[in-house]
Length: 105
Image 1 (cartoon, rainbow, N blue to C red):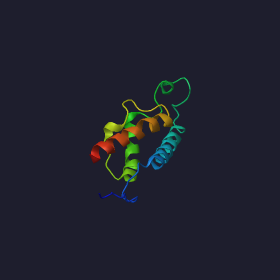
Image 2: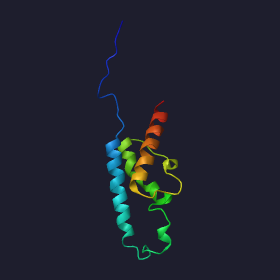
Image 3: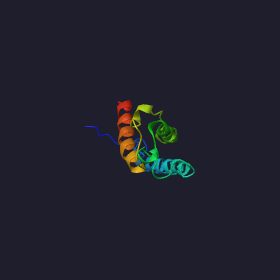
């Protein structure tokens, strides 16, 4: 009976830490743009909007694609956007993982 030996280099692991770090970095840069917005003061429409709308959030995929080595569809972004960076991380990591798993089968 033959046994299969896994080559550790052949097993590709999900780059969770790299993706998380990239999302956090992208989020921080995106939020720094909001600090210069004269309309982002308290008592305005900005109080009820998400921090990053879905149209802006699509840009993070451009940062994540080189990490996963694949083009990521815009449909991975949550409609409406994200209220904070942890919400983005919590939504995108499982979505990207599921997409890559589905794509590899």
